[in-house]
Image (cartoon, rainbow, N blue to C red; front, top):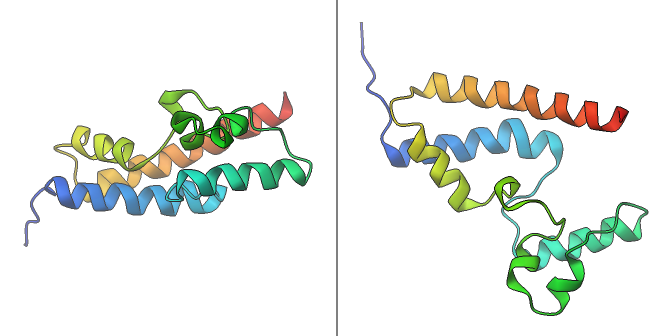
Length: 121
């Protein structure tokens, strides 16, 4: 039999980004790789179509960098960016590729269930 070693940090980082895209961002239509200005513009467009008003959009227009990076006014611990995914990859030291995939599959279930509960009120 052939033994595959555990993935190093760079490989884990690639897997984390791949599985986050595959299981979280694509099904939920979240473009986490957009520039901060693009996110603010997208939030304003969603509001114009009848969505919820993004609280931080005004800060983004006034040059507030933190508001521009977070146009939907999410708490800092809920914003996903390159550095957040890198931190996840570092914390998954000792996980196999299969375990990382299963983790993101369960995370997808958790996120979708949480969204469904929030919609029901």
